[in-house]
Amino acid sequence: MRAYLIDEISSSDMKKIRGFLSEHALKSSLSAIFWVKIPDDLLNSTQFAHANCRPHVFAVELGDHWVKLELYVRSLNTMRCSCPDYCTESQRNYVIQFANNMLEQLGIRT
Image (cartoon, rainbow, N blue to C red; front, side, top):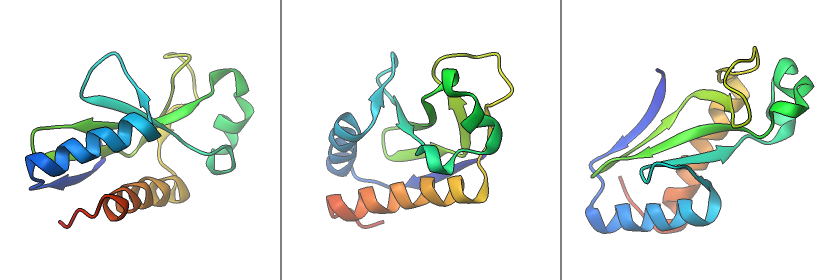
């Protein structure tokens, strides 16, 4: 799996990140996984055409001292479809910018 990893994060900063994600992402059934919606205007043509598969999201996984953002766009409504795929360049930029904005808003230096 391709991913964007931010590591060497303090425990206190990880608590801030968890709180941020609780407010700005969808919680999954697993406590360490969050889903972040990809804006419709960034969906590739197949994803955009699959309105019934929305929302399209990327996963954020939290470890003890790291955050991993997957560079894979998936549907929360179906597992068997042609629309999940690795990020396009614009989607990848969105994922990385989401991470950078989160760190900046929380005042976390890495």
